[in-house]
Length: 480
Image (cartoon, rainbow, N blue to C red; front, side):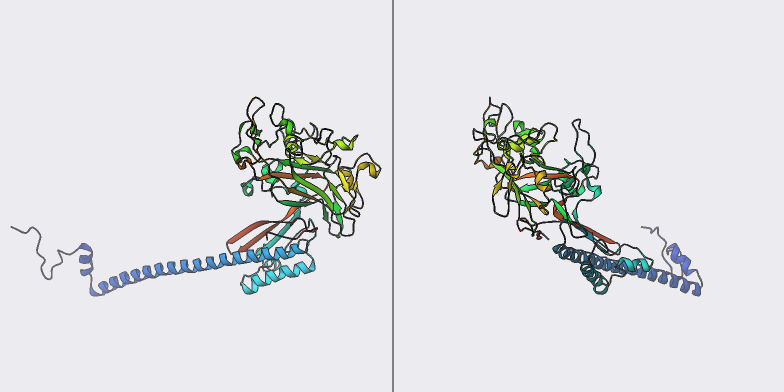
């Protein structure tokens, strides 16, 4: 068979690839130069690749180092914040580098900057050094501690038509720092203006107690308390969880929130149990006590008065003719009624089982005796009366969820009530509370610590709520 491909002959270049043919046709010097160019180009490509890998490795190491520094510095700053809070005044707002820090506190913060600059080798960590070097004035680490609301933290109540009223109230929890919803960290600022937003409420769990100061210590070391002004206002609000949280529906719900047992609404089978101390348990115990160490330890407690039939009669705002008709215990039925603003009159917004005008029990701390309004030369004593007393200097509101809230579990009187006090399926683990006041930027049951760290291109911000430990007569810290 005849071979169609030409046979390669020695000395011939006709069968070689064109590129090699071109090279072989060059003079010997040209061939050497071309080979050198190809080799050098290949070497440069290899070195460029190696250099890129090396730079990526270096950047990765630097980034990991910066991230480690950010994490360590943030944790150290949080520990410093805890040390600052240990001796902080009630309701104090302060922070680093120079926000209302005492000389001792500033020295402690300087140790943090020293550690950052000397041990972690973070250049220009202090804001002064940054400014002097012409660099950024933002420090590598800052601490802000917020113990009470600021002027920009006011919230408003929705009016009868549904529109949001003026931003008139300071709140506890402080605006946007509540835990009424798991989505509070991403809540929009506009939503937070509404007092009813979940992030302006705190959950109070069964067995839990919280303390909310009704005063703060000013820069001169003097207490500033609620009702120092004539137009101050006090509203304690309590509400149930959303029905969707626990699968409640039908008559167990009203406007999307759970109805508790007993259900005092007309035509409900458990309505007769409302106000019966044996069937309508007190859920939230409350007291207002003066923690002034130089005072007599006076306290204000819920009035346990009952009517002739042995039932509680709910307090009505401003109603003073008869002390015995002013029961102010926060029971399940009372929380249900307050949801519709029934307890304190139709002029009040929902969820208010207490305001400043209800009539209360007053205990003289010096001898433990119970005093009524008539014993003090007046027809009644109210929250406003108590807080206005000149010898009450450091008043603190304490709330404790002492019994198990339960879903009503009842139909109308024509249906069947399946409520069973031993039926755990009807238990709910928490209620929600909120305190609204006018006239004073109220402290909270917690301090809010915000730490910001910046190392190179890495930034980190953490916000930690630090609860006051209740029941110690002061404000020891926990959860730090």
